[in-house]
Length: 387
Image: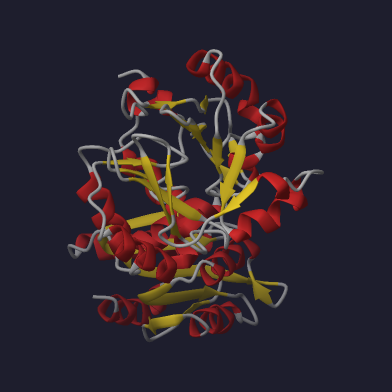
């Protein structure tokens, strides 16, 4: 399947975005194997362009627009989200078509002058919840989606072809040409980009439940037609902070290898007892991957050593990210290591105590240096507490 097949909507609604298979770091922090910047044109008596693309996709975007529009001129640019990976070409497009009206929420109107010299206020149409816009055959209905995942966001429903232009909702990392199954990159995207805002996603899902949706067209990743029920159910589970996988995710951060060895031995003990286990070395894997796994699994164990009377930084980095991403509703076990003054366990526990609905299993296990047989009693007790 070609990447254009993955974003095909209909004869009237055409993809004009840009696939970016060469991008390795998204938002200067997330490792990815490319990404797509999606934009669509609705061809009707009045033509509407749905969002623009990142600066990296500028050339391809305008090439695609030229091929689709030919000599026709768009009447509207619908701006659903002002983040630069979707809004970078608003100014260039607006200047190219001076009679084109820009459409968005009041929040979009307020953000335009923050990114462009011209605020386009004389050409801006502010829309509110459930406002509609007729293009001729197609009628667009606007639905606000604040904090999914910026405050100005809206999604757009084409009442004629039953297409939901979903902004960043239902998006995914990964270039379209990779042809990956949606969920393989979607969970990495969701928990790191949108995951903090579960309540706001739930609010949007409730609004979407009242719509007859045949197609979902997000701003990143493939268009959805046959898998809509699956992606909605998946987003409902994720945004409710419910686990997707049974078992225990063990994240560890080790300086000289002793904590790593203890964590891997503990993982084998759990696995041998029939519990599914996934381990991750935080000194080798990106923190965004650990955030994803922490949200996916029903239980989590963290193992780290004391460093400068604090938590070894790779582990503290994960705990910081979990806190700001609104990690909640999980059982957590803690293993600390410290040769002379172990303090990491206390500080890791404090992190989790500041999160919502976290059950901390007892005991908090302390290892001093290398794991010894005398540590087995405490580790066995923790294993029992995590079952």
